Length: 341
Image (cartoon, rainbow, N blue to C red):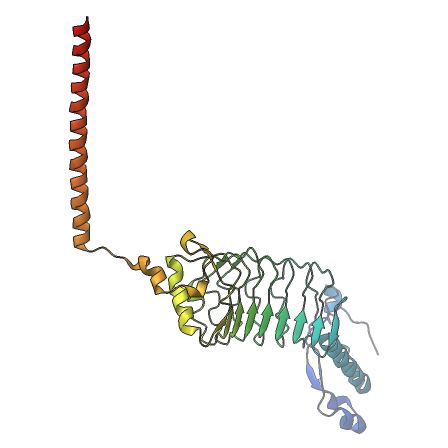
C-alpha cells in the first residue's frame, strides 16, 4: 500500500547506480554502462529539497534526455552568436556596429574576434577567460583608455593584438601579463600615450612586431625593449621624441640591432632639444651625445676654484677703487662750489 511522503522520510539521498541494474536485456545492450547520477537537487524550498528521490527514470527516456542535453550544450557552447555579430569558421566579426560595450556569450571556440570601429570604452575583467582558442583580438578604433588587469591570463594562444586608434595614456607593467604567445602588438595612433612602463613587455619572448608610432611618447626606456629577443619590426615614428642624454642608451641599442630590426627611421624625428630639432632619430651618433659624458677631474675643480677666487678678489678691488674715485669726485665738486661763493 502506497503512502504519501512525510517529513520523516525526508533526507538527502544521492546515489550513482548503474542503469543496467534496472534494465531488461535489450535495454542493457543499448545503454551499456550508462550511469544515472543524482548529485544535487534543485533548490525549490526546504520542503521539496528534502523529499525522497523517486528512483531512476525509464532507460529510453534517460537516453533521449541525455542526448538532447548534450546537443543543447554543444549548440550553446559552440555555435551561439551574439546579436549584431556574424560568426563563421571560428571568426566572430562585431566590427562597425556602434557598440558601447563588448558582446557577451561568444562561441567557446572563437579564434578570431573583431570588435573594431565601435565605441567601446571598457573591457570587463575576465572577459576572455572562457575563450582559450582565441588567437586574434582586434580592438582598434574604439574609446579604450585601459585594459583590466589579468585580461589575458587564460588567452594562452593569443598571437595578434590590435589596440590602435584608442585613448590609452600609458602602458602599465601588467597590461600583457601571461600573454606569452603574443607575436604582434599594435599600439599606434594613441595620441595620449605618454608613458610605457619599463616592464610593460616583460615575458613576451615571441613578440616580433611592435608598433608604437604616432603617439605622444617623448621617451622610451631601454629596459622596455631589451627583453624582446625576437623583435623584428619596431615602429616608433610620429612621436615627439626629446633626444636628450636619457635617449642615448635606447638609440645605441637600436643602432646595434638595425640590421635585423626594421624600423621606421625616416619618420622618427627629434622634437627637442632645439639644437637637434627636426633631426632624424637614427642619425644621431655618439658624437651627438659627447657632452653627456663630460666629467671634471680634481685639477679641473681646483682650477675653477682658483679662477673663482681671483675673480672675487678682482671684483672687491674694483669696487674699492670705484668707491675711492666716487668719494674724491664728490669732495672736488664740493670744494669748487665753496670757491665760487
